[in-house]
Image 1 (tube, chains in turn brown, orange):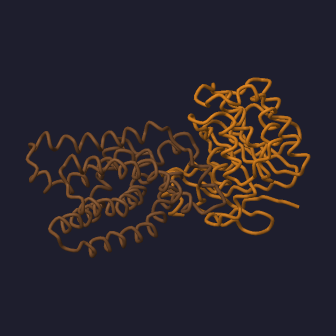
Image 2 (tube, each protein chain N blue to C red; image 1 turned 90 degrees about the vertical axis):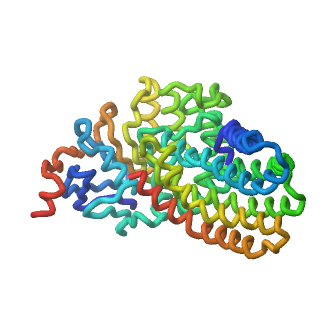
Amino acid sequence: MAFRNGTDSWVVVMFFMIVVILFPLGVGPEPDILNKISSGVIWVAALLSAMLSMDRLFHVDYDDGSLELLVLHPQPLEFIVLAKVLAHWLTTGLPLIIVSPLLAIFLNMDISSYFVLIITLFLGTPTLSLIGSIGAALILGARRSGALLSLIILPLFIPVLIFGVSAVEASILGVSSKPQLLILGGLFLLSSALCPIASAASLRQAIE
Amino acid sequence: MDVFSGESLTCIRGDRVVFTNLNFSIEEGEVLNLQGPNGSGKSTLLRLMAGLISPLEGKLIWNGSEVQIQERDFCIYFHYVGHQDAIKNALTVEENLRFWSDLRSLGQNESMIKRALDTFSLTDLSSLPARFLSAGQRKRLNLTRLCTTTARLWILDEPANSLDKESSEILNDLIKVHQKDGGILAIATHDIVMPGHKILNITDFSNTKNFKDLNDE
């Protein structure tokens, strides 16, 4: 699956870090405020950086004609989409999770809520990649595709954002965050079943 | 015996009817050469044969049974070479070929890969990243896939574009070998016309009406 250039994922991780670092500078260095907004900031930044890399998911293949060969592959296109999404997550989602402890310290996050944050990111970022693949497949061939992509998929990211943030919030307040985590898990399972089908269908459409 | 045919195919692109009632049939060892001016629908017909687009009417038949576009079984029988070369810039020449043959689970047959690169004299370039290749070299790399495929049916869309004379001749030889082995070939080209090719002129089936008029009839 050595599909892509290494620079892509660096750019995404750096973008993620810079967005998060901007917040303490903008909001001011009070530890209490930072602690309060930390989960929201990290999640929104994760969302935006997932967006940033999303349009490259199928675009390169579409441009150089590889997509035609993939569509003509005897394997169902849905599996190929799933493989691409997995590759996308490994190169962008996973690095985000790896650098997030650093940023959590930066935002004065508690250790206990930090663990919950990691779990939500593990459940949430693959979901983002999956949902994003639909948008990435739909925008193929469109002009101004980057802006269009964010209009299509950012609204779909909202449920993940809500439950991701509220799980961390619950743990900051000292309540169990199990319900939110279960819902996030459910969203992940649902999207991993449905998104490849939708993406594959729109890829076929894009090829025509 | 392998037979690939199409019956009363009609295809529209946007509002325009590209061709109507088109029939073709290719048998083992035969070459179907599509002729017609630019924009007459040669590529459209080839993409239709490859199942990349679906016809409005008519059907494709492989060995007596109708080809279902959604079914993936048919894909193992043919190899399609389109306008674009499907080459990853970040990978080397050899990796590009290997990746593709892995994808089609043709296995890592060392001698086969070597022979394929040798055919189009790409051996010296095999460790060069593909981004440094010229248009003709990219085309050659694309065509090396023909040497590794086991497909019975080749669908080639202007394969000789941007090839030099020498490489065109190599391609000609490949086609002849494929013919001799009982392969089937559908090709759209302006350059390679050989005796014994079946000629299909797309303009014979072109239709000046647009889609709305066709519906009214």
